[in-house]
Figure 1 (cartoon, rainbow, N blue to C red):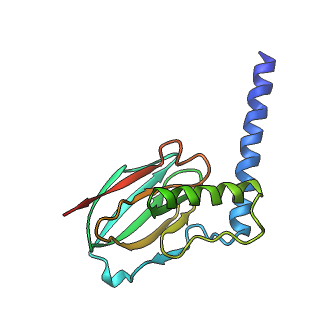
Figure 2 (tube, rainbow, N blue to C red):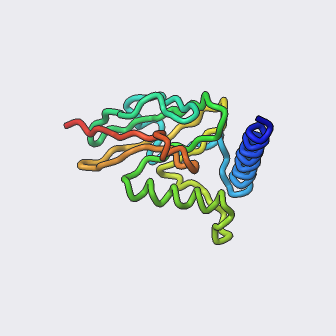
Figure 3 (cartoon, rainbow, N blue to C red):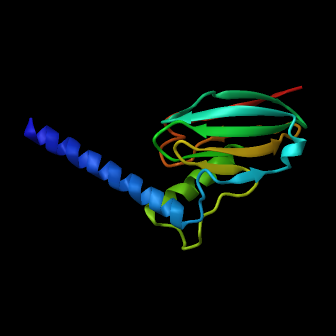
Length: 164
């Protein structure tokens, strides 16, 4: 019994240390969780607003219907205990961003500060809300996801269904 408690304590300690290291890396690497205002276009161009709630480890939806040419203002509200990322992109963009986030967390980055691209990703801290404005193009196959290590893989992702 005591070896099981020790093993769980060690796992919990490693998880807390990893999380604290990741949050320190985010702060030191140019992420401004919860304070980002990112837009591909201006708020004035947004046709509608969609709220997406992030919890640990899921979004409130796994599919969002949009139309080609539509401009959407996404409000991402983090009701979880962990930092989350909301990235819009195709499968290759999502994979590349996950690799960047993993390298940043593991300390394997090349020393350049990791920053979200102003066009397609935001970080949101627990209890915070941030926004991203996006205009959808014709024929795009886009998805959204949280690329904090392990979150996308555990199901924190979804797709955009392009309506005609």
